[in-house]
Every structure is written in structure tokens, then in C-alpha cells.
Length: 279
Image (cartoon, rainbow, N blue to C red; front, side, top):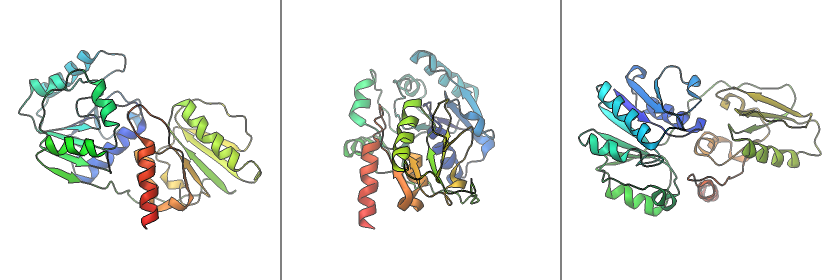
């Protein structure tokens, strides 16, 4: 059994893990995902063990340990946060030192994260999978704490191209939270304030009220990539999945970096801009 520990409330963590599982060609019946995410309904082929956001760090650790003891685990994959989001994995590493651990790494405000973790147990990952360009100090830590390093590009599976509306439309895509969704919507509304013929389609997972007759608000649609091809513009934040999924549409992708606790969207956006200039 391959266990994936994905601690995060957004849809992005599970989307990224699901793509990685497919690339690694791990059978779905050999996958177990531990997560507090509320978006597991989109990934019904996997088996989930739920943890709750309001539980203590010790309770998270105990759930992970109980899961390891209950299954025959071959590999334990750690998404984004090498010690857990609040250090809950430190006691797991101590309790199961012989288990094969794989770190799945993307951009992380490295020093901010380290400063927030009270206990950092020594860990040597059997392998670290690098998904994008990261901070130099983060990479140095990975090299010092990994036996192997492998870079993987999460290529997007081709999906059917569907026009969402018979009128010209733009897409606004962001799962949450409310303030972030509204920020992106406001930017799109300003850009198209004098173009009443343009329909603005918002794909989100949160309850919001927008007083604009041109906006079509849609919740609970996944994936949305099938509508990219026919959109005039696509507005998103600078999250990992958005930047990855829209590489083929850079000419019409409007990126609005958001200030997040650990995900440095401004760093990722600058790297994308630099890459665009080199092409």
C-alpha cells in the first residue's frame, strides 16, 4: 500500500497528488490518502483516511500511526510539508524509522515554515520528487536530507475541448477562499467593464454573492480544464496547479498572485515570467 499524506484544505493538494499517482503508475486500489480536505468527492477511486482541522497535532500523529499499523505500507509520500503542516510527522518518523519515506516538494516559504515547526526530527527521505523551481535554501535542505532526487513535470492529460457558452466568455477559476475569489473577480470585472458582450464564468467551491449580471457563478464543477480552449481569457491565482495546467495558454492566462501563508505565489509567478521571456 502506498500512503499519501496531503495536509491542506484546498483542492490543489489532491489534484496534484492524483496527477502524481497516475504518472507513477500506482494502481488506485493500492493507494491510501490521509487528508483533511473537503474535496475528496472528486477523487472517488481512492481510499481516504480523514483527519480534522480542529484536531490537535497529537491526534493527527496518532491517526497517521494507526494507519501505518493497520495496513501493509510499502511507501509513505509526504506532500509539501516535510515535517507535516504543524510538525505532526516528527513523531511518526521516530516511531517508524525503517519505513520508506518520499517527499513530494513544491514552492514553500521555507524559513517561515521551519520557524513554525516546534520539533524537527532528523529524517532521511529515500527520495524527493521535485515538481517545480524552489528556494535555494529549500533545495539545499532537500539535498542534505534525501538519498535520491527526481524531477517530475506533472503533464496534463488531454481532455475534451468544450465551449461553455455560445457567447464569448472569460473564465475566473479559484476554489477558495471567498476574499481571494472576489479579488480575482474584481480584476476581471475592471478589465472588461466596457465590454458587456463578454460573459464572465466563475468556477469556485465557495458561496459568494457578486452583483454583476454578466457573471455566471458555478460551484462543484471539476475539472474545469475542458473549458480552457474556448475562453477569451482565463483569470486565476498563481497556485501550483493553475500555473502548470495553463502553460499551453500563457497568452490568455491572467495570473494574480495571492499572499498565502506558506505558498509563495509571487515567487512562482516571477519564475513563470522569466521562463516566458526566455522562450
